[in-house]
Image 1 (cartoon, rainbow, N blue to C red):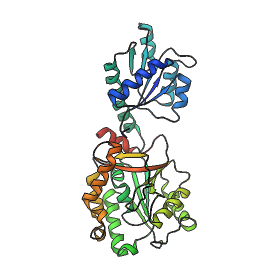
Image 2: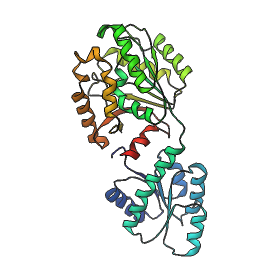
Image 3: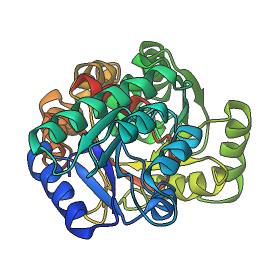
Image 4: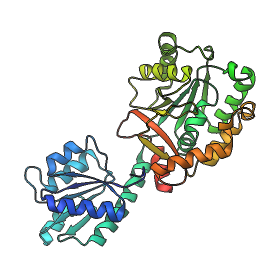
Length: 347
């Protein structure tokens, strides 16, 4: 399922109707659809599934459609709601509209109208959330200079465009991979291009520990920055420093709501992403960020623009569009990566 597919929750106690709506939306609108058999089940489902649109019947046992609508308006006021019923009457329409439904459909459903309403309201709902969201606080952690730009340079560029606060924490100056002073200047240039704050630490390149001092160092930055989202290395990596930083970060950011791991050139085949973030609009900026690391480009094939572009193009098989950065999600909040909404709307 593409990362930008509209997410729809269908609520109906008639399993045949629910299956019909699910099938139509999946096949004709490319939606990701979850189903709940009544209002109470829908409320519980919303703790695990964040929809762009809710499509609900009115007459259901327990919590009916209008009561569910009132609950949605109380807890999820920005989510568009479509109310459907087999009873064509002014009373039902008035009740639904007074309860602030965004659309009222009658059964038997007109499939074309259903698809049009869901597609339109999904786009409107995403725009509402983007307009009302609070800026995220981003902390991107890497073992060496250029690590975070390679892994999530496009995502960081999207966060910058969305007005999010960005901090980059690099734990060593990468002296084994080049001149430490040059790499420091390159890191500063990249951070400046992002409008990011840079913490450049002095742990020994190739000897970074996954516990103790490394955890405490990351905790200090977390305490100062107070991030809402953290990006770091994956544990599925051949480089010992990358594995150590992943382990230390997960321990040090245990109270952060969203933590995700990016791919590096030394990732193993066990790297199994669960999020595919489109960076169609931000790939050119990622390439410019990587150009800052001139001391590395002559010796690192994976920094070549064609290589970076091809990698992003490969992952688009899973996330849609023309360029994607993959992430292994360690944990996530309901507000996972607000900048991704910006990318969704633009694509």
